[in-house]
Image 1 (cartoon, helix red, strand yellow):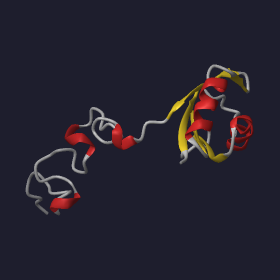
Image 2 (image 1 turned 120 degrees about the vertical axis):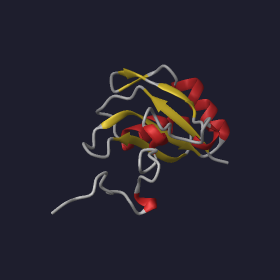
Image 3 (image 1 turned 180 degrees about the horizontal axis):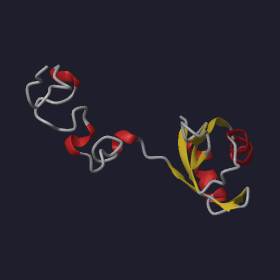
Image 4 (image 1 turned 135 degrees about the vertical axis):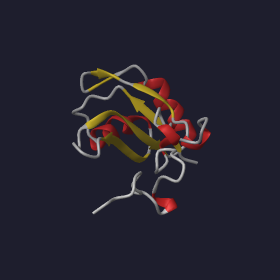
Length: 124
């Protein structure tokens, strides 16, 4: 069964192919992805590698954690799925309404049908 690894501390110049080649010394790679910013396309400094077996993943952790890749010391650990995190994934932050459309306003947002209701009557 495949095991997914989180790779932190990556250089901004590291590519998905470079990550795949670096981890190939520990076993069969199912996938290797460097996470990039969706607007600029620049690396966000972390990525994921999926190894073919749990044994190969453990080998990668023991052999590559703390090693240098493209001039940066990387962190290699087992990836925790988002569903296992408290709250089930991305935090809502400090936005009112927990990031829901309408911002937590009563009657606000698209789902109520009154997204742009004027507060005072408009006189023409």
